[in-house]
Length: 275
Image: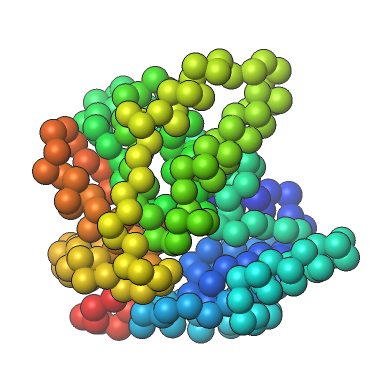
């Protein structure tokens, strides 16, 4: 939602949003939900992958709120999106909302954390653990913490294949977002600030919660979800459960660990059901 606040800004009733994601994409569901609230339609291009029960519910609900175009592969989906964008009839929202404009929403959330720390209502987190997929959340938090001069480390729990989910992608997003900030501010951000944001001390990737395939449940993620469900939070197996498993493991390190929940699936669960 933080990215969509910017990406759907100015959209008018009657327009059509175009986006893409895997079959169980929570991004597709969120985009379709909020575009509809603004009076816009959504066309989503999706591809198959491993699906948990919660992901299946996400897919069904998204199908009710958007026109779905199914493709067999990720490459086929991207080619379809490219062809549709060339028609000029759509307002495009990128995969995961991860573009410089969308990443600004996550920069803002890091600044909110800095305000809460300054006000004494939140202990300074030594690290913030987020799911790492399209990279927008991690890039925005890393840039925002650098701007706020917080020593917090952003740790991305990788949930996709290394070829698409890696430090290079996050760094590219961070630099592009910094250029957008500099454009509107009228002055470039210091190179040292960008180097700090992407340094190993301030941005790390955890690889051991991937599970072997995008969307494939992980036993440690299931255990993490089981811990939080009685406390009122439902984690999805694709993203948040894996990041929570990483956060639980990292909590043994010195300092506070903050788990960053990117999707709460409570409303999609039957009473008492495990996600």
